[in-house]
Length: 170
Image 1 (cartoon, rainbow, N blue to C red):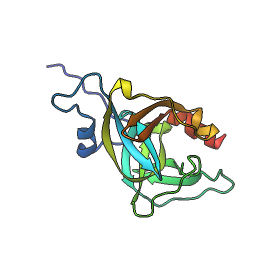
Image 2: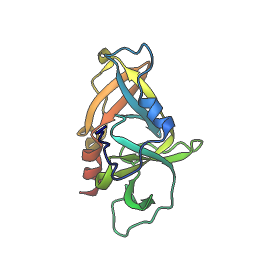
Image 3: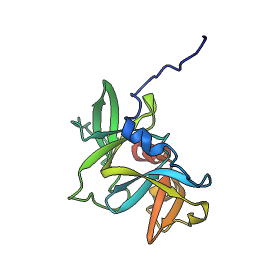
């Protein structure tokens, strides 16, 4: 038997509980847009499961001198040094005091960066017709919006996180 197995590079695979969130549910509508949903303060954010590679408790942060305010510093994740960003000021919100802060790693390998989120992410599904025109956002955030979805009275924003984080360090 000649089976080939892809080798894993970079960060370890998603834990089973996060991988299960990405799996389609029985009877799921194939038109649904499934995303990982999380919050930063009052801002509701979305990311494709392939974009977010890991969720960890807040590690030790090693600040860097003369860096932008949104770049908290560097963190060590499994021997890999990753920049850690706090997007609360960009989104003009403050972290929820009652929520545990976590780090969601966006990207993979050398392109990975961490963002501070409030609480645990969850799986959400949207129908294509729930896509709306995004409400007003800060200029830096508005240029990176990919899509906005309505669920009840709430707007959920999906961003190009690579573009968003690059703007912060430029």
